[in-house]
Length: 585
Image 1 (cartoon, rainbow, N blue to C red):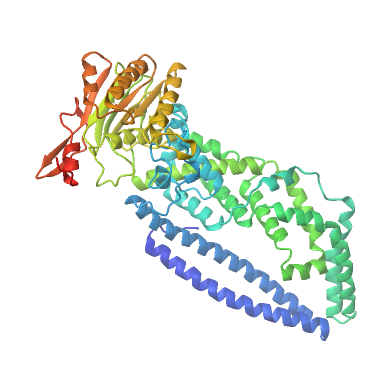
Image 2 (image 1 turned 90 degrees about the horizontal axis):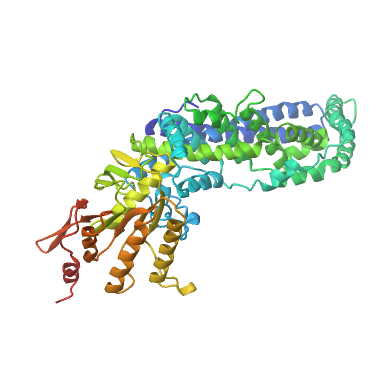
């Protein structure tokens, strides 16, 4: 479908499609009444009216096809309109109402719970354009995975090429949104595909006899050569015969996927088959869909038709036709042929479509943000960034910072006054590492990243149900980091307000001990603290560097520039903040 990507054009096409749908509904209803009347009169009084019944039936079927096609177009255009509205919301970082991926929140994960990867106002909400559980889970797994430069580079090329094909990206998402409504588990369907064949050789007799015998009897009755009672006898015989295939078809109807799911897969396959991407990763993802043995879109279109027929066998019109022409035998025969030829491919296609969904999400984000930045993956244990910004902060409000962690530096000690930007900066660095790892460009002018695993300890809270204090929760988190250090892992850590749950003396002593212990391993990272005394360690530890965020008090107000500076913080603002809320000293 050739859609002009301008809101007014889409709205115009949508209004036209809705008007056409109303007209088709009215015409179809009129033809149905004519068809029903012709059948009743033909069977009870004037057999010649059965010919009118057949003609009106053909017209009714044609109108159904036109109506379904129009309904699909209307659903597709409706989703395009919604997507444009959501694009504006994402651009302004108004993420309320978007799927938060709450089921993927894992407090034990090395970094995701601290970096707003999932939950309210999260990276998942900003990126997610998937439309079903499989695609959603695939994207979530990428966001939770540890740093893998080779895989990130592979995805990055695919994402960038997709961002240059916005029509493909939009059509892919809108198709899924239009037709996947209440997704049905495919476990039962995959089990059915592996079951023994239920077709029996003697079923060929009713398969052939039903349509031929029914057609002959209808014709003879229509021209008055036999009384209509013969048709009734034929229907009784048909009911008896159809009991042979009732059970296998009933079982199939229960486990077959929803028609909308298969329709989506077929349309996705068609989009992919028609694509002409140069990226080798996208080519590899196209290979299972289209090769010399089959074309997936045609196979899935065939499955969609079978799914529709099998799941709508209780429809009044189908029941009438089934009793006359014994159609159930034909349905079972065609379903068995399809299962033999293509049943082994459908699960693999679903997995490929999940990957396409995740890549389309990243491609859509890259296109919407017009982000041309590329990370540079280094073999050295360094991080160097220029004008780094947080992706979840609106562009006009986000403050960029430069940062470097050199090869001989083990620890950045980050000090600063309250609300000056320490925690936000650490999260900015961490979330951009996650973005680079999934194949996105970081929100920075330049981003050089070494071969690190990522580990954070920021949001350690108490748990009354498990009798765990926030201090103990932080210690448990640090223990995980120390275990990684002992195992020799190369880790980049972000530790916010270290050991804040204990007294000052123990906190300073424990912090220094941890800094020295981590420095003896392959771990390096940032530790933020309010204990300015720790900044003196730079005089004795050549691998420790002080950086800070500052604030200024002007006219009884505290001002922040949120810019990272060299050296320790020269002043703190807790005293002034307490004064401003009414505490008198």
